[in-house]
Image 1 (tube, one colour):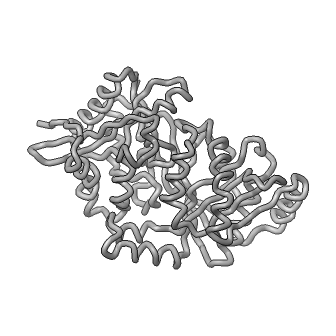
Image 2 (cartoon, helix red, strand yellow; image 1 turned 135 degrees about the vertical axis):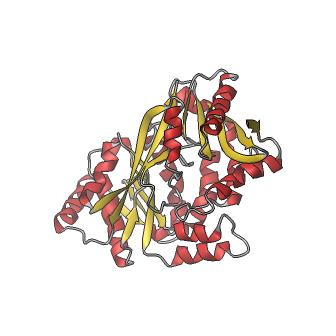
Image 3 (spheres, one colour; image 1 turned 90 degrees about the vertical axis):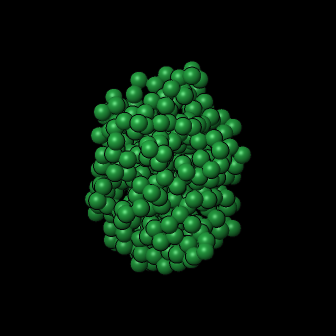
Length: 371
């Protein structure tokens, strides 16, 4: 018999965080998250998303053993933005038992219904920068640290429980060291001259910090119409700057700025940390940080985290400027492989960028919905 309990104590939350380490322990493709980051994400005192979010964390037990987990989230800001009253579910994982998955999802939905919500969708996080989507294609591939990962039976369970596709994200693997065509270089120069814009590859963390406020402002505007997105608050922006941009490699980040030195386009990539995170196995200490530091300084593969263009600058070729600039950096640094971030299948402007590269589909992840 399966029992569902809400994780309310610190020891129960620890079980919630550590369950995937048990479920995927023998899976060579799974990339463990950093446990300290998980604590921070689920902590109501540390995660600024709780200014407009509520959450509950549920564990499934069978014969006294944890066999599944799910987070239920109400993002009031998102519901207001999209004129919706829907519960989100995220961080879901379970053994191959339909009773387990069914009761977890029912518990998440019932929790939301008790608070006036109608329907449920996910996997989604507190923000668009949290893990989102359930893997439906690409199970044999090694994921990036930002990619969703799960066993192939997960989607089958959701469909069994009445969930249907809401939308998909797609990711590509592509060759990043191919030379920039001369024609593209000429066109880019014409674009820069015509619109009086500049392309900046960051040279230091100090320079990067000078542009981060403008970057996040443009990110909020350029992502505003993407599925489930909500504008990041100033406290959330500070949170992500401290958590992620502290270990950024400035030379892998490119901004396009206008005459006022405001960011109008951006391409943010990081060294691939997939294998380093696997070696760290969720822990920075005693030796996990060594693997991550090595990966940050010696790498031939990168992951795209974020790309975007301010809506006022769409259809002006701005995306080509930062992609070519980053392409040149990759050639200079002998970086031969890159993985795109998950991009919505309906975001044709973003997906069209990759048409100029030799690429192959790598992952497809899905948001499911049940009314």
